[in-house]
Image 1 (cartoon, rainbow, N blue to C red):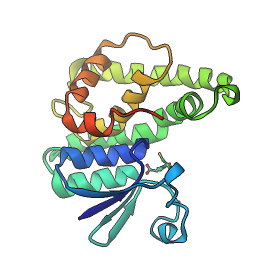
Image 2 (cartoon, rainbow, N blue to C red):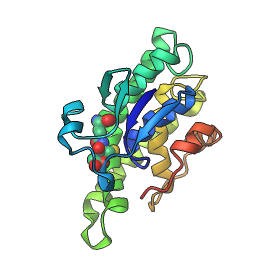
Image 3 (cartoon, helix red, strand yellow):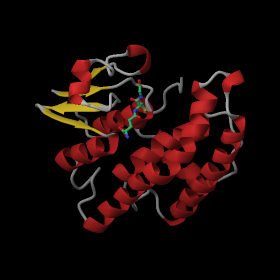
Length: 206
Ligand SMILES: N[C@@H](CCC(=O)N[C@@H](CS)C(=O)NCC(=O)O)C(=O)O
């Protein structure tokens, strides 16, 4: 059975668990990371030298990097659904996965880390403020993109919605001021209606 290492409240683990849920793949999940430890042991580091979660073992094939895992599972089990069959639609989904890593995450991470994972007296609030401005602009970009499509890569849900979806859950559930973004709201409501999103992404942030 597919083995996944990672704690349930990690944004990167949630991407993989949500993908497995969408594909109805049975998995054996092993708690690892933060309070669970495991990821810093020599045995784990022999499988993932970064000592980070998630990590996947599919019949002896080890893979780390959440987006690589989501793409692998989507190609293996969701060609034509989670991984769009058409090259241009798949590239569109890929584009938003890349944009999450190179752009949005750089702004979400400092806001999330300070507001959710750091004690109030230790928070770097100037960094939160500057990052939140950039993050807001990022979500405005997504809102404009969603003006004439239901999902990030067009009419159908795909892997392109996964990193953006777990980010949106944090955007809507952190204690921050948000502008009204009606296309983003409508897309997020569509995600919230998906059982696998509910099960794996709509969890307490801490
Ligand atoms: N680029 C990697 C990042 C992985 C990563 O940073 N994982 C975090 C959790 S979100 C981690 O393992 N942190 C250490 C820990 O949880 O102990 C990916 O997308 O998989």
